[in-house]
Every structure is written in C-alpha cells, then in structure tokens.
Amino acid sequence: MFFVLSKVLLFLLNPFWWVVILLFWIWITKNLKTRKRLTITIALILIIFSNPFLFNKLVNAWQAKKVDLTNQKYSAAILLSGMGGYDEHNNFYITASGDRFIQSVELYHQGIVKKILITGGSGLIFSKKDEAWGIKNELLKSGVPDTAILMERKSRNTYENAVFSKQLLDTAHLQPPYVLITSATHMPRAKKCFDKANVPVVIYPCDYIVHNERNSIMAFIPEARIFFLWESFIKELVGYASYKITGKL
Image 1 (cartoon, rainbow, N blue to C red):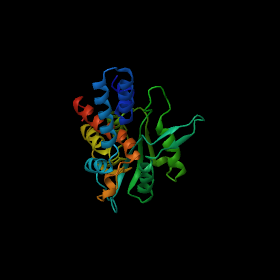
Image 2: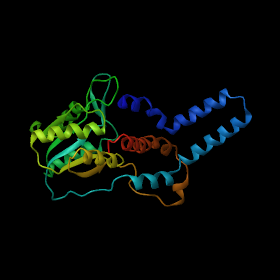
Image 3: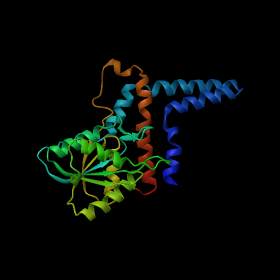
Image 4: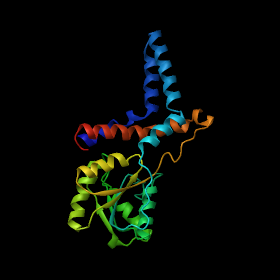
C-alpha cells in the first residue's frame, strides 16, 4: 500500500501541477475574491519556484558533499537503481541521472571496489521489468566481469534496497564497510535506511543537481528550468519525512 500510494500521489509534488489545479479552480469558481487570491497564489508559486538562488541554496544545503575514495579498497559497492528504464522495444536505456552508473564503473576499474551490487527491481506499479538486469548488461558492456556483479531484484524502494541488500551481502560473506552509490539529493535518506538495516556504508554521492552556487545578480532572475527541477527535490524531502514518520529511518 505504501508503495502504490507513493507512486499515485507523486504528481502532486510537482509545482507545475499546483499551477494547473489552481487554474482549474479559477475556471470553475464564480467568486471574484477567490479568483483574485488564486491568481496571486499562482504568481507567487511561479516567482518562488523559478528562482535559481533559492533553489541552489536549499539543494546545496541538503545534498551530500563530494567524497574522495582514492587509494582506498572496499569489498563491494552498492549501486542503487533509479537511473534507467525500458523503451517500447524492450531495450534498456540510462537516463540523465546515470552518473552513478559511470562512477560505479570507474570505482571498479580503479580497483577501489571489487564487486558491484545492483539493488532495484521495478519502481513502477504495473511493470515487472526490473532495472537490475538492464544495469547488469550495461556493466558487462563497460568491462565489468560477470563474476564481479551481484544483483538484488526484489526491492521497489530505498527501504527495501537496504533490507534486501543486507541479506545478499551476508550470504556472499563480503566484508563491510561498503560503498553506497546514489544521487547526492537521495543520499541522506539512503544512508539512514542502510544505517537502520545495520549495513555499514561509506557514502559516494553522484548525480549532483547543484554543483556550485551562483551569487551574482543573474542568480535572482527566474528560470523555467528551475521550476521543473523542484519535483525531484520535493520528492526527496517528502520521502525523507514519510520514512521518518513510518519508522523506516
């Protein structure tokens, strides 16, 4: 139920749909005062959520900081899914958040990690195609041997990533700590989940939304691009809060 509900309500975390809903409200209401208030609300949403300065400040304060693992050795890296999907021809593709895939391959070829554990089944309600298989094939194409790849294909969210990864790691008798690889904004929630599951990890954040803060006057000029970046960040904040409330952290 938690999984289905979170997917169904996901669209409400996008400010774009807030504007659409308010516009629809303006259309159906006949009260002039209500229309005026709704119009002002829409204007405020557009101004606030298209402001690069505000977005950069908040995201930079939230996302995990960069980590240098040079000259260190680990038995395994835990690579969280959420970076790919399948097209209509059943071909797997990596999305714009695929930096975690690139970083995992580099850590392996640099000898920093000996194995890569891919964790993630299907994150969609009606799909049975798990990401793990697709990611494994891409790892093989990138020169990572089959013997260095482990797959956990049952999990559908971050909490299950941690629980099922622990079972697999214990069975494989791999020594902790492990390198946890996911996006920088998702890392705070992911790290808490793995701590809760008693999986010792060293974080390795990737897929940074904000790389540096712009402090010039240009940072205060609204950008449409920023407006649509809020969805993933709000999703993380809500996800963290919901996990906290339900005892998953």
